[in-house]
Amino acid sequence: MKKTLLCGFVMLSLACTVSAQVKILFDATKAESAANADWVIDADLHDLGFTGGPAKVGGGNESDPQRYPTPLQSTVTSTTPETYWEGSLSAWGIDCVKQGYEVETLTAFDSITYGNKAHAQDLSYYKVFIVDEPNIKFTTKEKLAMMNFVQNGGGLFMISDHCVSDRNNDGWDSPMIWNDFIKNNPVKNNPFGIEFDSLNFSQTTTNIANNATDSILHGPFGNPTEMMWSNGTSMTLFPAVNPTVQADVYMTGVSNTGTKSVMFTHARYGLGKVAAEGDSSPPDDGTGDPNDNSLYNGWTSDASGNHELIIMNATIWLALETAPTAVNNISVTPTKFEVYPNPVFGAGRIKYVLDESGPVSINMYDVTGKMVKTIFSGQADKGLQIVEFNSSELPQGVYFCRLESDHLTQTQKVIITR
Image (tube, rainbow, N blue to C red):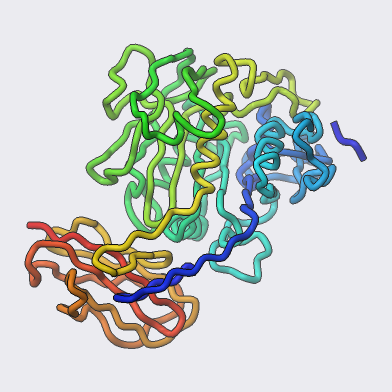
């Protein structure tokens, strides 16, 4: 209850980094506190209603979270209980603060943006974006913002619930909403290699993937050994479209090396990362909106306390910077720039985002640093741009695609195959 630059250059490149406190943003724009859900870290008011869609002030008594939790997170200590804040995700928020992170809420009437510096809570100001069981579809602009956020180094935590869990009665439940984002975004169909299944099941599983190098399963909070679904869904993975996707937890009774019946997973995309789970019960700490009928402690009581371990390991993994790599003295850092598919077979595409309009050159270099192909040279507009090229003009092998403009210089390793 409440108490009152990175920068990269081809050949002889320099790398510079700027350290700052990691900021984590919890979304509340998608009816996350509708009905008996309360997926917020803290709310001082309970005056929202969600009947038939978006939030309405005075339309009900659901949580209306503010941007900053109270009391101030600067007063949180190593012994602060999760009841310091009032929200079913308060334990998650308190644990994040104890890790040295700063947490905020994107409030119910705000919007999801990326690259809009005039927006105080633009995703570019955050390292991790957590969306727990969205009940309102993402707009096309919001999908683009989230994709650009991940591409450019952000960490996205996607949490779903079971099918037919439409809490605000607008015809869309969370598996449908996540799959709409994954499949119908303006950037790439199924970029993460993850699809949510349309299922509703409950079970406790100890079917953990056998991967000693998996930071989700062997992280700072320990080694989780089980998870408990209280009406959730599973996921199907597609490593052919994203070879980085890895399963962490499977349903009981299935192979723990397959691509189906996955309960928790993670992947990389561009310079960013995503984590995904199929049930909203595990993050629930049981102490949210006092107006809700029933609250359950999935955070530390269910699954012998393992939910806190895996969710915090995943949060920390998402918050970690993705280190740049170097091959033959060529620094590879594509923060606002991507070549796909990669490896390239035949036709390839290059996506890049400019903060300002201006001249752009895109060239391909071999491993010795010799320029072997000019893909584009000319004026380009501000915002997202896509350029196509034919890779069949080059022998198969390893190359480095470099973009240069007045405001952006990026290089990405590219593999051309036949």
